[in-house]
Image (cartoon, rainbow, N blue to C red):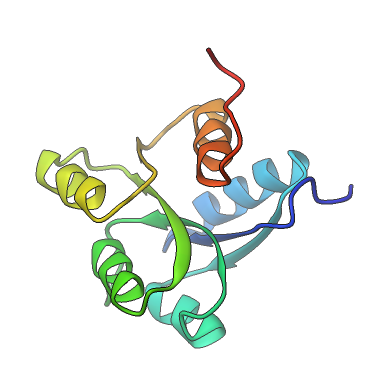
Length: 129
């Protein structure tokens, strides 16, 4: 299937099963997705350069998702950030929102919520009213 958007989706999650499941969902929806086990792996692969949409777990070993978001923002990197987490901490949600996160999804989440958040991050209207 040809990618439906030229945007690259970067999935950063330390859980292998989550990475694989998200990659399957996104590819079946026509997106090009790359996966990383940690924020450090993402930075090693991209040097924080480029652009795209970052689907980012908050709780990661080493550099946390929130810290990665702060680092990329300080570098003026052009990544839209969608946070995913199993922990619904209001302080994290607020910090992510203030730093410009497009969405904050609590695991497990519906595939449609993720796809809508990606469409929002890409600047395209969502499919839900």
